[in-house]
Image (tube, rainbow, N blue to C red; front, side, top):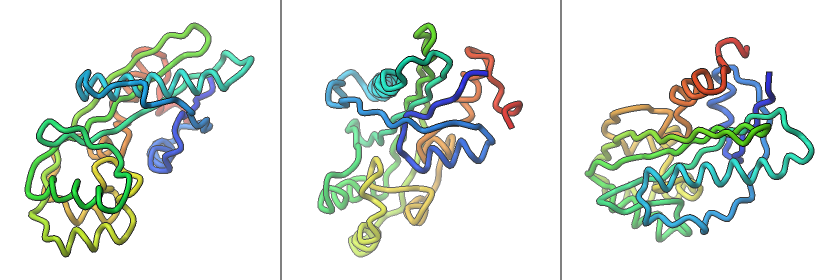
Length: 199
């Protein structure tokens, strides 16, 4: 079977794949994400970013062809605005204030890329998340944990950010950063890789 490569430095994505028993190696992508414009729409935007990351990781795998690269990119969309990772504490506070008491979408683009022939399949998954009404004190306390700083929308649902959420509609793991159920479908249907047989 082909070697599986995860083109992501995210410990959360690695943990999700480990928990379902998939054996893989990590090759961090050095893709220039600024080359993709969010103006193309959030669903296509995250798919294009995931493809860009997969292709960049593939280039780093010199003189090899027997690999399948998995990549992903996650954004939060609220009131039509795409929220990536905050650049500083003040931006994290503004993002959380904008999400307070409202429903938003978490969209993750995934891409599976086969090196030997360049065949790729990309898709996106959307999950709806509703936040509680958050006081400024709660927002300040949460941001002070520094959990906000490396996460789209300035929160991590798998950590203390769970305390901010009122309800979720859709794939929880998509909000964490990797819709592993949809990924398993793509691997099985398009690449003949069954994760349940990979243990």
